Image 1 (cartoon, rainbow, N blue to C red):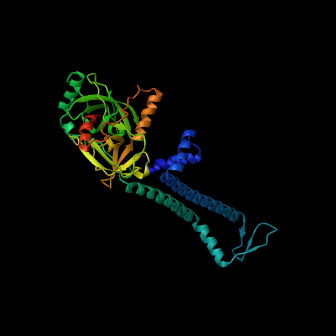
Image 2: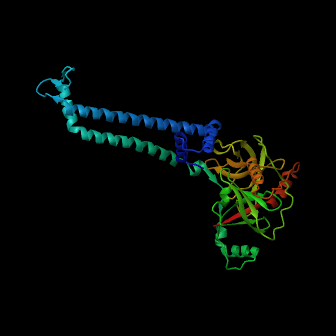
Length: 386
């Protein structure tokens, strides 16, 4: 996610005309559709206008001081009397009071000190404004209060040799060709019957190697084929020769928007065993009003990222992404419609073979226990090696 400094740099480039036409159109679209984004732009405009006005006043003051200095150099002041020769024949003599003479003498003696003080004051203003921005940023937790949910796997670190032997056995490699220790894990689920899976992008970010593990401890090597960072999505493909397919997927993928208050559930791997979570769809937008995500009332933990979110009829409606740090029950999931757009764009671009997506759900009308039994064989641990 972008920091406030990133947004200010974007706004500065937008106002200066430094963006490309598509980038400028995207900013204008977001200004019209996203109230929070528009408010950030308004705050930026107000701040820069204030600073510009202050700078203009300082420049005017410097010009006035320069004019006064030139006048002082050109004009002869008769300190004995009470008049000032203007040096211009058409202008009358100006009366100088004793008080004004003292003020002029003071200014001449302390001009340098006053200018230094003014410079210090200007620096103090800018330092205060910058300090306020730093303070506002420091008050926000990581990612502005949003935490992703990939899990650090200590047990895999402690049993590195045993895990590496298992991985090498999958590929038929020799034991000495070991991988780096496993570092993170999350959840993934089948996208097609022929070996494509979905998880969250942040789960696999920085991975050198990926291992997919089912609930019966079958393991397969996988590789990312496409990622969508903006919507926290990643599509993986199993590349093991011994993989024979998942079989027909029991769930379908929802292309539209789910209803507010709808009952939803998920399966994931916040620990080594699969964990069930149930709740409801509490908002049609995610963290800070992001319309690409849902907010759900399901308690989630590190390791749940990338897990499927389904409705009562067995339609997959989202992919678990993260949670709000100050509200344990407020979790967020990428909408399935964005996953479908990604799949459609990849198929249309010819970047991969056509994705054979299930069109109907086998879980419609079944009990929750039956739905879980059908779903759990299509949900996997995604283990990340760096």
